[in-house]
Length: 61
Image (cartoon, rainbow, N blue to C red; front, side, top):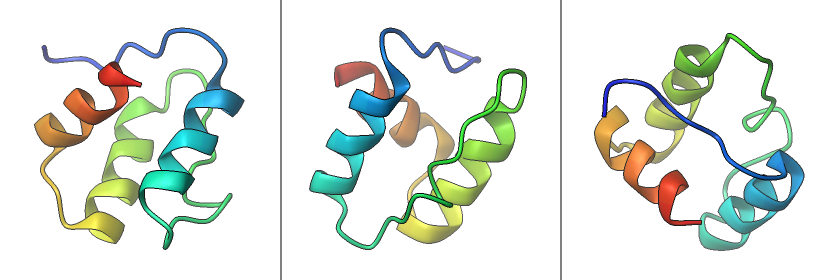
């Protein structure tokens, strides 16, 4: 999967991510349409995970 597909309500997904990773803030999870790579970059630097790992985590929520 090369692109991030965000399904459902982003507020719900971001809440689940904050539960799973306590060090994430609202600013880290700020999502704007068309800026998926920017979001992944912020999460990647904050969590130390690859973009592919992050895509898998988000797709499972």
